[in-house]
Image (cartoon, helix red, strand yellow):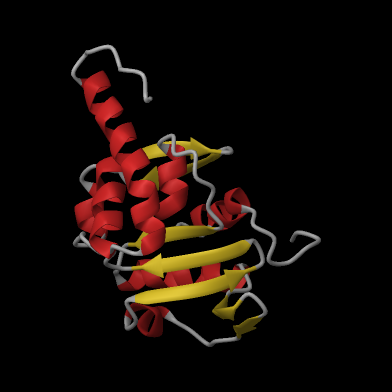
Length: 177
């Protein structure tokens, strides 16, 4: 465990999830960063597979992470959970030993894990292999959510997506200016 509980250490948070064998896809700001976004993020957003065995593993991981329900920067409340209770709520905003963790079963603009898994790719993040949502799915989700913080980053993410598409089509990428 780290010396400073709550300090944002996303690789450590992801490592606990992976070592607990939780099936999940990384989405949100950290996924955007993996795809080249210059915007910093202060949380980890995941979409877990919603089956009882995986939810049991998720519950175990949350206990290992010292997860608490996020109320504010100054307050997080303890909560008791198991596979059933975790699966009954669409979104969990949590505070953990390694920073903020948002769990969403069906992010805006998506149909959840199976939908995102179609295009997700395994990526090494600091020595941890994680399934990361495709940039087009990150863009789709942020556009559908329509929150101010998402709308601010969307032009940059759309430009990154255009560059990725150009690369896939074998054209030399244009300058992102």
